[in-house]
Image (cartoon, rainbow, N blue to C red; front, side, top):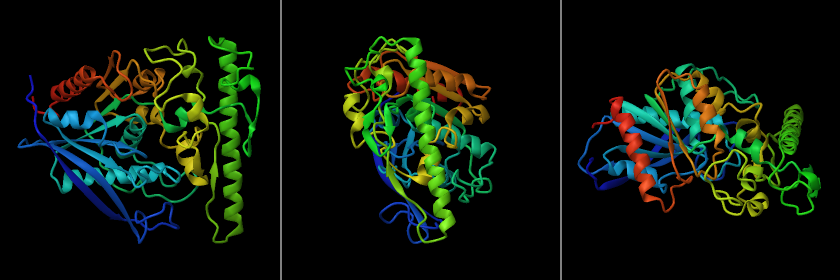
Length: 392
């Protein structure tokens, strides 16, 4: 039985130089030739460690999640690291998030003195973790999908020593491709919809349980809409570049982006999730609401994080290239990450040392599930201890 430690929280600020062609987000971060990053480091009181666990999500801050603090209470040192796009993914460039994560890892090793770093990829952080690791092990990226230079190939990214992929999906692009509403016929007129592809319209003759034929048609229509948006983005970006004026970027709205049939038909990709519900509440409400996936985007951001054909934050591709130990954890009642995604990533992973585990009954956030949270933290600690990345 491991002792329980009091947890100390420390605000972390990192700054590194970067010259951008234009300001992407409102505020200080990215202005004045520098990137400013913030995080929270949790440390067990009076307990040193050679290993730092880094929790990072492309667009969220994770210090309020239960797992990081619970891990620190078991004796682990934990950093909840925010990217420059924290709580605002409108202009997020995934390649720049890799650089932000790299800055934290370098700081952890060169300033704080940790010998080992473990990336914990929860939810959208899973694809980030494996994509970063792939580039750190074998860097290839010199430009963003929009053609802007980004110094990853020669940026000296430091590889992590292990990856934990927890309650995570394959990528933001994969998730959007499976949740975007294919009923929208005109991006500028979201009320013009194909009734037979609108799963929230009671007039739709296709109702749960859905037939395999309908799901195949639905998925094809989702992908077609994604690619129509991508084609428009590339055409618009090319037009702006051809003008050679001060107008370099454009924002736009993507309507109706949470319409995954799995939320209405629990027999699809079945797990223990609650039917007619999702991690953000009523899926029909979220489909049109302001917090929906990719609701607000820029041209460059769409290509970098949302385009299935262009994003370098593709967890499936990244997993094939990594060689460090990998632990994949599926929560069996997850109502955010599609149940098929963890197994797909595990099967694709190139790591010689890889482990797959399921936390039975766990939801995406472990909300109101203290025993399952304890099970998850014990699993992670035991796995890391076996690989001498945490003290027994």
